[in-house]
Image (cartoon, rainbow, N blue to C red; front, side):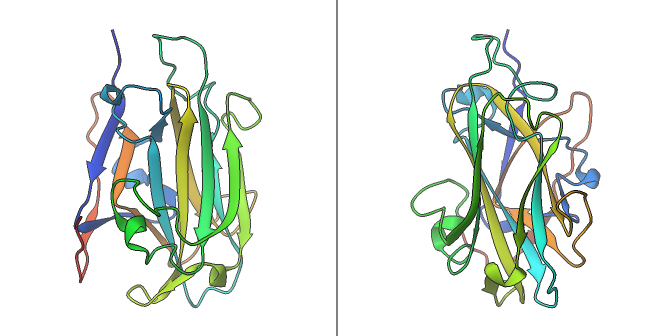
Amino acid sequence: MRLQIGFTVIALIVFGFSKGQPVPSASENIDFICTFGKEAEITWGDDDFVQTFFFIVPKTNKEPVYIRIFDPNTGGKHDQLNTIEPTWNTTTRFSVFGGKGAFSNADAQKPFPRGNFKSGVQLFTATFGNENTYDDKWYSFGPLNPAEGEYVKEFDAYVFKIVSESYEGNDGNLYRYFFSQSRSANVPVEGSNAFTYKYTFRLKSGNLHFVYLEIGDDPKSE
């Protein structure tokens, strides 16, 4: 019997905002973002094996920031082993983008990863398999100078993008983000926020989950 642990929310004309710097936020009652290996069947809940999030930095913030990932590897304490082939075989790449086009490129704002969705300037990238170095631990991208993000007039702020992609395997990589002022601790960036156009996360059995939607001034759809 297969356990479907993924659930996807698609926002075609809205922004799905996280309340604060943790992603998922505590108020959502969601424990992990979920990205499956590209060889997994979509009945597990992930239909494209890619997840994109945007982080907003107020233009008044001049201090370096960090995008931290909790448990970025696949295997160990939190991840979902595909019991049809019970060996950890999934690799996930996380990449951070800033600069012109990181957010404003139309492909970046589509809920499905098509075209130039990895637009902008790639600032950092790291790939994780089933090694245990960061199992149940944090990995940090940065420091990021806020001005390295793309300035977006409608937010009056700078925006960074992080894309997670599973290139091989069929297991579920479960992880969380935190947008921080510190490389080694979760220190909120004052006035910052996070959002996505498509949210794939693990359902917690017997619990209510809350996803917050905010309608933009100029909604876009495919």
